[in-house]
Image 1 (tube, rainbow, N blue to C red):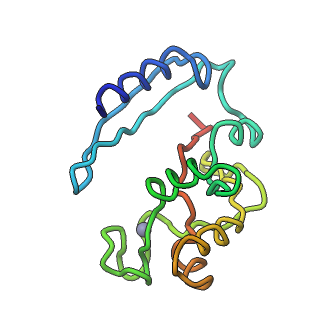
Image 2 (image 1 turned 120 degrees about the vertical axis):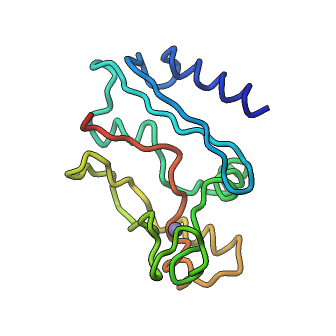
Length: 163
Ligand SMILES: [Zn+2]
């Protein structure tokens, strides 16, 4: 099942169905510790289709937890599959935790807007509303959310605009 969906996704990406014309693509399949496969896909877009500003980034990437009142199905998928943590001080046994800190940089700060940064990786718009959605769905306190799960969704994808 994974292979069929993965191949269909690669085909659609390569033929410009989502982001525009692709000049190069590289991908690798990895297996998590529980054996679940996932793919890492790098797309290099043709010059005319490159994502160059915050509005372009916001058109294809979201670091938000969807509002469950608006789209419960999407909220459930993101909450189940895209959340990072708990880790750091909330779970020092998490594989990503070293010396009480998440080695992946979570939790990420909330941001009122998407901004470019010096390394070419944007800081995505990430409102603190997701804390309220998560708090309603879990037994964690607001403080725990801010310290741990406030990392919100880890992202559906990421952009590097300096390549
Ligand atoms: Zn972590």
